[in-house]
Image (cartoon, rainbow, N blue to C red; front, side, top):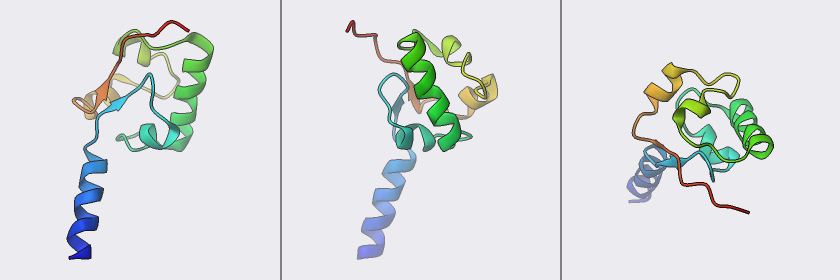
Length: 84
């Protein structure tokens, strides 16, 4: 029974939708081809340039290519920028 509960939890984490404007390092690292190092670069870019307007801007982060976005299609969303 514990095995099925753990499997269910892991499956939900693997297929979670990640908002690149609010995601943590761990959430970003859960995406295909994005490990901790790239996740930190994404957050650094976000801190320096503000939130992402669209996925085209997401490719401006070093190491994020069209192929990475394609592999994660349906798992990445870009929320509306909130003024601070």
